[in-house]
Length: 358
Image 1 (cartoon, rainbow, N blue to C red):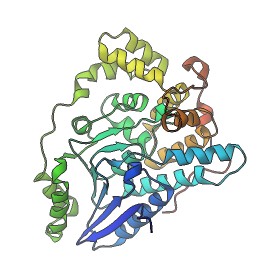
Image 2: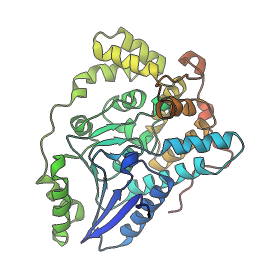
Image 3: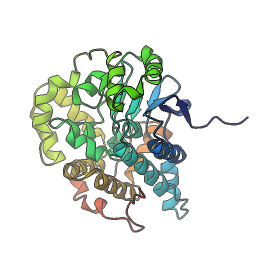
Image 4: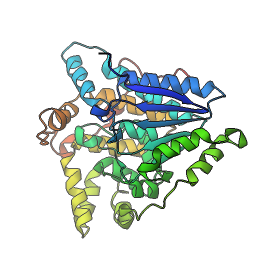
């Protein structure tokens, strides 16, 4: 029996619809999916008859749970053993080029971030013009917990969030619902999950010749919006801003340890479970990303992927979380003090930097 395509493309009137179709894998992105999405965005971006693009996921559980990191880890292990199939370069190059096209896309991009939205799912949704969350949205950048770092453009997006929330999210992998996403500006709209299909129908039926495409999109979304509930993270703003504005991960932890209350102690405990190397890399990545263009952020992230994949912690994180599932990673180095300077991770890879064709 022929396998279903991993990503579906549909034209309905003036709307292009991209549907991730790996429900058993929570719509995790493969290299082929990223390449196909990038190609459709290129073509639909040039087609004047296409006025807006919708992205969504199948299966009812996830928009997109990230990239297929297990496949990347398996390829990386083979590469370290001398059997290089190229996936550790091709996947990130392809995904990051797709992220760049999303970020530069001039037409409305409406991401229906219903359900689990992590890692690569953040990259697929957050660079577009309209990010629609629902009561079922669960979003995070959990990379420090698998020995990686926030990527897919997170080095551009997170440092530009209010206060020190970006670094907080980068180090902790905190999970956000619709209210927090709206509070931080990561979601532009909140609607009820049960009305997503009605929203798609309304966008298809909209009078796209009646005005500028983003204004038409806003007008349709306005009729579906619900007021977000109170954002749980908002009450912790003072603690986050005070502690996560500090210059080192060690200083952040020391400040959290001195701060009374369960939130501070639980946050410190969470960071201490993460890869120390990943935490230090992520802290420096966020610091550098504040002042870089989007393209330069993507080049920096690609450099980091190639450095991290030559190391230990990513493979150990995948083992502990996805293979053995013991959730007891043995990080090397095991402490922040042992990590030292992470500048070497930001060096250009021997086989060249990430490039963009258009």
